[in-house]
Length: 191
Image (cartoon, rainbow, N blue to C red):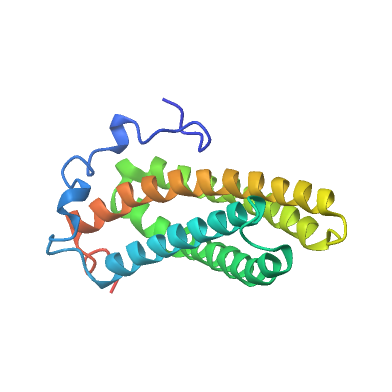
């Protein structure tokens, strides 16, 4: 099974050792789902919601439901916030959380290394989406065809980013949350 973010459809069996013990259906009621784990999941849900809003905004513009000027004014701050928060979140995970988790459960270390590699892949997709967004924002409103082409290019780059992010968030949760449920936040040093 490939672990490449663009081809992965989940974790291989050797990295499913805790998700099988703690499937998603038991997470919310589990005694070890503490404040940090709940916060982590809410951050991920926030990324999902922001990503869907950005995709909907792009679709509304491309399908003529949102005028260019209105879309540009709406789009710029939301994309900047989304990308900035995502970058900060990944930095905290790479430098603080993943090392702790990998040390706590060495059998999952390879998974946390894969997640760090994902962050590089996602960062490259973020840069592509950012560049495409800037090209769209620089396109002249008097050249409707150029605006539509630039909007289409951003939409494609945004969709690629969202596809990568969706897979990554799900896989990350499938490693992190079961480990927290198994060990508890306190013993992992997360309080």
